[in-house]
Length: 403
Image 1 (cartoon, rainbow, N blue to C red):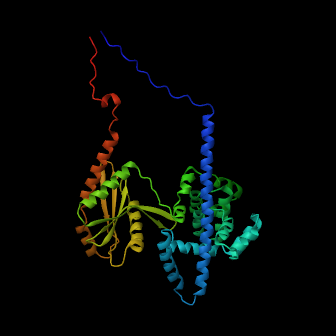
Image 2 (image 1 turned 180 degrees about the horizontal axis):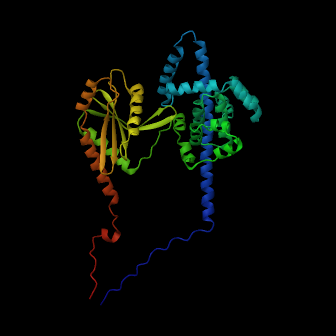
Image 3 (image 1 turned 135 degrees about the horizontal axis):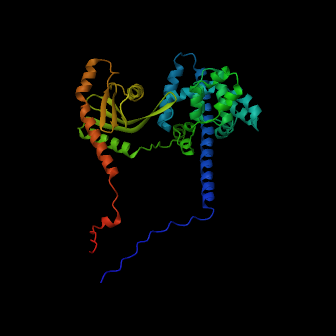
């Protein structure tokens, strides 16, 4: 007697609740706007704080102006002590920007702006003059005077022309420009093009339209490197699965070669000018007594990759290399499918003898490239493996149809 077969029925999708789409849209909107507001609040307080730091530095410099090198010595000492107490975010370059920020936005300029734009300009003038009692109250009052995020002011400080800087600041406020938009406009000389245009109103309307690449999400605003540094929060970086797998295997591979390589860091962040970069891996070679900066690309090698590594090495030589160590060496890895490449960057070394010693001591480029290619192939095969269905997972054989 044939067994009765169970009817296979698919689970019906749950019915959508009436009005749910509108509910979800509203709640998501609340959260996004709250995140933007939080980012704006932090940015305002951060900008006011950095203005106060700049003012204090200038005041101290004026007190010790008898020494020609007083300012440099002061910033170096202050940077070291602040970094020891608060962590990253207080390099000499950052402190120099705070000092410049105060000089470009002096008290009289802020008071003049406050008189026409804010409900309580007297409180701002009091905060600017340093007459407020508590520091916290002074910061909160002063924060009203800086409606743009700190990242915008950093970019504005790079504009030498005072009229152009005022123009970009006004347009950024009027149009609600993101930092990407203000970067693009300054880079394309929007001020100069508008000044030369016969139809300035049309140019301003066109320039105020944001492009797709200008958009900054609420998550990006909150995770801005400036905000994370100011709050002392850990910087998290999301890698692709392939990139993360390649970096992890490369790290293990180099450490397995012996005790020459010592791991220093992964996704080490650095700042050059107004731009932020990340070094995928940073090692120290004990025999060569130098840092090894490793940069991984998922496509083919280009001259731009060599230029970027040169930038990394210059930064590492100035900021990461300790006294008595040799100049850092770079390793560029391009993990293009079926064509992995590994290249050492030795051009910046002081002489050919040292370059020859580096090349003799470091692992062979072809061996590293082969390991990179093998790892990519394994990772991609794993990703392409089909997921077993529950019926196959039980190991039951299919029943042959009766004839």
